[in-house]
Amino acid sequence: MSWNYSTIRAELRSGVLWATIDHPPINLIDEQFVADLSALLDDTETDGSVRVVVFRSADPDFFIPHVDLERIAEYTAVAATSGGPDDGSLGTLFRRLSEARPVTIAVLEGRARGAGAELLYACDMRFASAEHALIGQPEVGTGVFPGAGAVRHLVRLAGRGHAMQVILGSEDLDAREAERIGLVNKALPDADLISYVERLAERAAGFPEPAVRLAKRRINAASLPPKEDVQVDAARFQVLARDPASAARVDALMQRGLQERSRTELEYGAVLGEL
Image 1 (cartoon, rainbow, N blue to C red):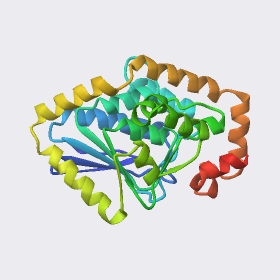
Image 2 (image 1 turned 90 degrees about the vertical axis):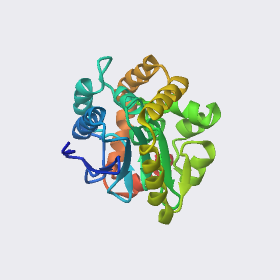
Image 3 (image 1 turned 60 degrees about the vertical axis):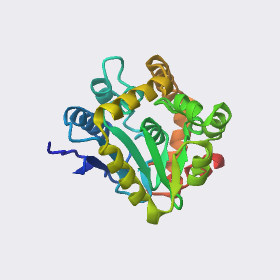
């Protein structure tokens, strides 16, 4: 397998595919990233040499900040051919990620917000930099709604009250707080993070695959939301994304440097409170 993608750099070592998101300027989700993620899921489904996939970012500031708000129609059109037969949403594509044959691990060394955080939750495990990781769901503060799985995952990972706090507060959580409420498995110092994940990934990759696959399927059966709920949330996002009130808030954020390497993106939670 060549593992050639435009927005993801992939390297296979010891049964572990290291998938590094590299989509300048700040790793926004657009139609090319959706196509690449779908292709990677297709490739790892058929290549039995990949036992574990580890997602990380080439950008020290951003894992994935959110979707490209100027290309919602474009990435939705690609998702319609990538996310599966049921619908064309990011939620369905991320559900494919949760159900993928390999074990999936996310390494968060910068910021993951909106759909970027939802991609994190869709992975089987999440590990974060204690010094630099931030997680946030800014959708409600922007006038929309988390449409790619955050509601369903947060309630299951963190409980109803914490889900309310994260989604309705639209504030950033640092790695220690995310670990405390269950959004990440563990927050680790930068000096230990990659070596810890590498050991865990290679350990899982070395175990008998039938046992690993069965364990993953049964854990998913006990913990993943019904696909119909994911589709409902995706539809609600599309409705609010067209709402004039949401458009006005997005315009105000764009004027402050949204989707650029600016204070607005670096301190999104704080900036939302200033609008």
